[in-house]
Image (tube, rainbow, N blue to C red):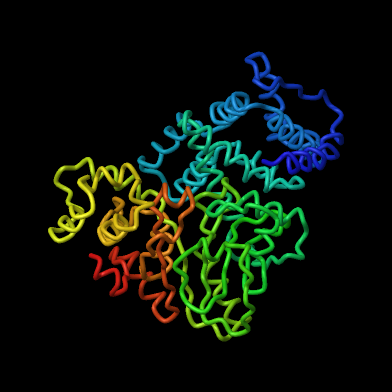
Length: 457
């Protein structure tokens, strides 16, 4: 959570919490053991609704403010307290569930089932709903889940509260509640700063860089929630060009004067960033591209091609793993001979050294083997479900895209060379085939691919 947002929430909640005149809750940042009992009392009073709605809201604001004042250790203890003292009573659930296996009348069985449903709902869920009712409460819960996910890596016992938050957020961030907005250079400075802060694929280097990305033939679209009107949830950058782009460095080069084009034929989606870590697993991106395509078609009827210029995260790591396997062959016989003509080093030695990146003859010798390796990685490396292991590939393929083309030296930035030896991928969205490709991928794990990709394989 940014310092500005942190201050905004605290300021908004201060006015609410002052409506309660009881003893204030004061906690140290580490949440020491002797502070747990007073905290339990406050949570219990909040859940019981003592003093009516105004007092309950004030207590919820006080508890939320106290949570924000804690460091990671204190927050972990706070969350564990919710689960241990205000979570599901498993013994009670077991006793109630056992009653369902006895011979009881249907009317009584219905009552037992209803009782079981209530017992399976942790009491702290009510507290989460009370947080949601506060000013900027939904943003607080999104960031709370981000904390739970991060802290849960070392404390798996926090999983129950993560699951409850995920379920709640999926409901609150249903696509029907979201608004798609086009962001341009005239947007408020605070929003533009957030685009810079949240960009996760291609870092925004300066305000000049940002202005270039929002230029005449550039677009940025984002989803917003009505209760978080100043916070983008997920956003996509688009370039309107003449043909499917093969190099992101050229797209991002703000030093080049862009030629205005009133009738571009191609929309290139070159970056998609989730702005809220706490919304991981909440389906937003699947709808974003389709909604943006509809907006672009209305705005610019000349567009006929919709494609991405996508990174290949994890490819270099996968390559290193394959090179440790003596049985995995990257080069065919002709390629091996070609490589031997320009160097006495092996394929594996060259890849690990990265010296070849500055040598044209070595680049030419390695180009086809590396592109073939990318094709293998995307098409054949699978999750247990049968879907593509690469997260970016899975995202676009599950949206109905075609694995269209591998671009040699498509991203020569330090990050691009490190994660995929400079290569990028075009995923093509053929509007006539999206539904068919989606169904075949989801139901049969079949990856739609162009003839270029089939040739690599």
